[in-house]
Length: 369
Image (cartoon, rainbow, N blue to C red; front, side):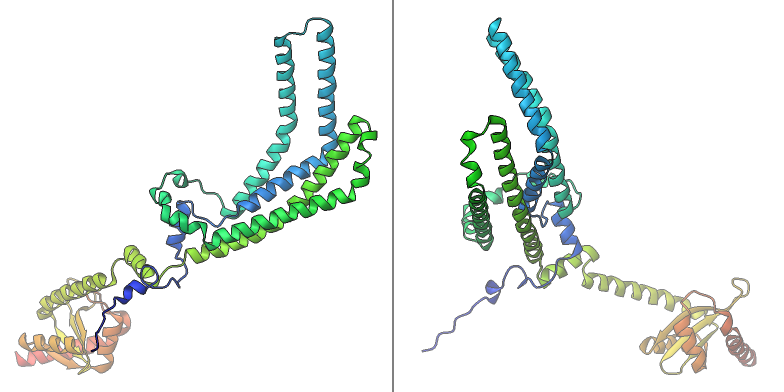
């Protein structure tokens, strides 16, 4: 015995309206940007800041080192002076306060340069737009099911791969640097304090400089990946594109109905004015155009009605009911239909042909009278 099972195929559709195959519209990109959703690589920002930091340190290491040495000497001398006189807790606090201020003065230019580079890198990626919406709490973020899915998502796998690459780079460069400088480092115990500090500082800065450059390449790769990922995430279904178009432009069906109602109203007004026409010029089967001329109202005849096919037949019917002359003139009928709007005067290039028709109609009406 066969049993028929009914399935709702829309449950198998991917998202709303099917598969997301359409590129994001400008409206969706604008809305996403206002929500703080942009293609941005934090790795690129971090790498740029680190590179700027170590570049400044490498460039001004001598000046910075001398400033710290001067602070040490001044502090040591101050302690020596106070020890011989009266060294109290307040004195120690004052020395620490002065040293902290001096260290901050030395460090501020270094960290400002790193901040400026990170800021410029951020502007390079997302341009300039301030929004506070990403800071607002969203209850959807507290969904444990979505959070569990994100742990095993492709994005987390990519992040894990990046972190592994970073750690591998750091280990390799650190080991390589130590191997190259192991002979020099083994003689640190035989060196004076200041040369030893400068040597270690140069090694650390060179290592950080190399790591920052490698991280910068990783950051650029991550930036292009984020751009592709963002473009894919912003894709829309055909139904979403249609819905957005309806919201922006209005429902095409409703607009079509409105245009149809407007055409009907215009045709009714046209038919109401049609009995005032002096003549109806026809194709004879496809087009009809009704003309009225009143020299006290306008300098040229006015087109008060026109139509094609079925509407042309209706115009001729109304003309017969109101004893309006119907004149066959194919060229004039076509030119009036295609070139003159209802309510407008006849253009000068049609004066001669129209005048001949009106003269014929006036003569015909006089004879009938």
